[in-house]
Length: 141
View 1 (cartoon, rainbow, N blue to C red):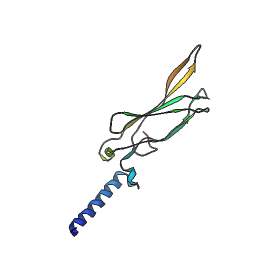
View 2 (cartoon, one colour):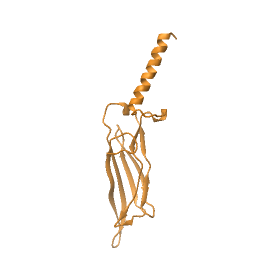
View 3 (cartoon, helix red, strand yellow):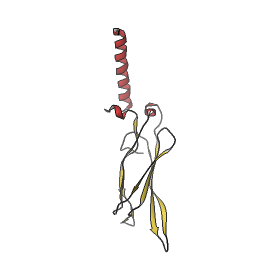
View 4 (tube, one colour):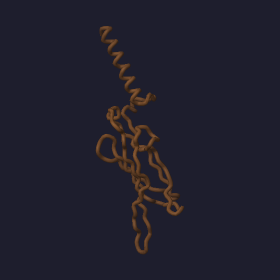
């Protein structure tokens, strides 16, 4: 390979590395992280009603997908002390590198069974309703 072509190839590789580094905020990343965006950071909490833990409540985490239509849905159930936890939700997309706004809708809905006079009534309760405006974990708007 002629020296000129080798130099151009090296310059192209260096330029690509700089572009990727700047697009990732200058933070170090592995090849498996290219195009990876965080749609919902890890979240945990405790559901209570009037100070009492809500046991066995079904929680549904609904996350809008990044740059495509559709939703990502995960369910969980509270334990005996009302605690729940959701792991972070990631998506890989080349759109991360395009000049566009990142805004992801996030929701957690709880289905809670309330005993009534001769029946148990399920009621949906909004636990979390927000947006994520950054592609990195542990950031929310």
